[in-house]
Length: 178
Image (cartoon, rainbow, N blue to C red):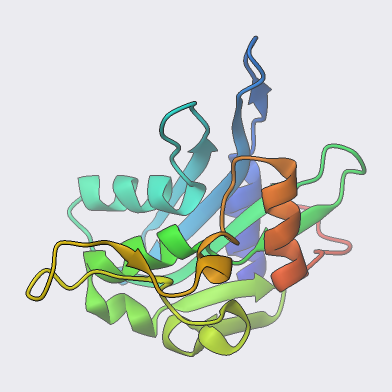
C-alpha cells in the first residue's frame, strides 16, 4: 500500500461534525496498515473530559480485530477555512500509545507526506523525543513529562493545537485527490 493509498484512506473517514456546545468530532482521520496488511481507520472524538485521537481510534479497531503490530500510520486533517489537506505527525499521546501496545511498533513507518516516511524510532529529529512521558512503575508511580513543550504539541482538540502540530512538521498534500 502506497503513501497515497494510506492518506486517501485517512481522508475518506473525515466527517467533521460540531455539536451544539462546539465540540468537534471527525475532523482528523487516521489510517493504519497492520503487520498482516489489513487497513484500519479511525477518527478523532473530542469530548469535554476525554478525547480520542484518530490514531488511537484506528489502533483500537486494530486491537479489536486481534492485531497489535503496525507497518504504517498516517493522520490527515483538512483545514475548513481554506480546504487544504494536511498530514499530521502523531501526537505525543498517540506515539506513546502505539509504542506501549507493542514495542515492535517502533519499527513502523510514519507517513509524513505523499512520498515521505520516517520510522517511529527515528521520529525524534523534529518531535524532541519519541515519547514525551516516561512511566517507570518499577521505580515510582508518578507520571512526569520529560519535556512539557513536546508533551503539549500533540493535541487534536483545537485549531490552535492542530496548527502547533503542523508547524512542527508542515506537510500540505498538494494536488491530492483521494
